[in-house]
Image 1 (cartoon, rainbow, N blue to C red):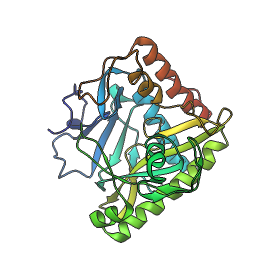
Image 2: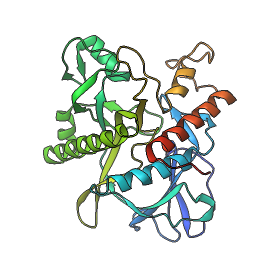
Image 3: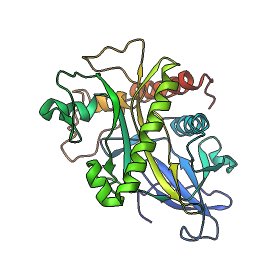
Image 4: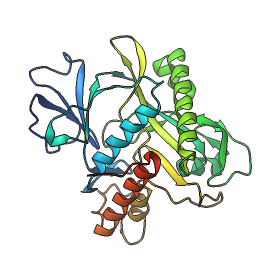
Length: 301
C-alpha cells in the first residue's frame, strides 16, 4: 500500500486500499482497485499544513468536509461529479461517500479570485502569479478580475505540489484537456463565488480535482469541493484589502505553526508540533461556522 500508514477500519463489504493526507479509500470486498468501478471515500479528522499531516486531529472535521462537499455538489449540479451514494457503513456515516472511480488528472486545478498567500508572495517579487502578469499596485486581498487559473502538478504524499504554467499543463495532459480543465475550474469558481457572496462569504480561491469517468469519457469533478481544506473563505463584512483577512479555514492552524509560540520552523525539515487544545477547538469552530454560514444548516455531529 502506498500513502500514509494510518489506522484502518473494518468496514462490512469494503477493504482498505489507500490512505492520503486526510482521506482513506476502500474498495468493495473481494475486488481489486483495478477491477472495481467504485470506491468508498472516507474523510478522516486528520489535518495537514505545509505538506505535513499533523499529529493532532480536529474533531468532526471529516463530517464537516463531507457534508459541505455534498451540499456544494448539489449546488453545482450542472457539473458532473463522482458521488454515487451516501449509503455507507454505520461506522463512517456522515463522513463517507460511495464514488465513481475516475481516471484522475495529475493536476491540482486552482482558481484564484483574490491576491493573497503564495500568489501574493510571488507578485511582490515579479508582479506575476504562476507566471501570469498582473497589474501594478495590487495588495494583499486585491480582487483579480477576471479570476485566474493557476494549476499545480500533484506530488506524492509528503512532497510539495509544484506550481506549473498553463503551457506546462498542456504539455503534460494535452492542450484540449488543459483548456477544458481551465474552463471548468473557472466556471465552477465563478458560480461558487456568487453563491458564497449571497451568504456574506468571499471565496478567495479554491483547489479542485477532475478525472475522466471511464463509463462515458466525461470530465468529472472528484475528491472534495469548496471546503475549508481546499478553499479560502473570508467574511465579506470584515474584508479590507491591504491586510491579511481572517479566514474560515485552516489558516488558523498555519498561523499558530508559524508563530513564536509553536517554536517550529517550517523550513527545518522537522515534523510540526502537536496543536494546543485551544487551537484544535478554535479550528473546529471555524470549520463548523463555514459550513453553517454557507449552507444555512445547523451542523450535527
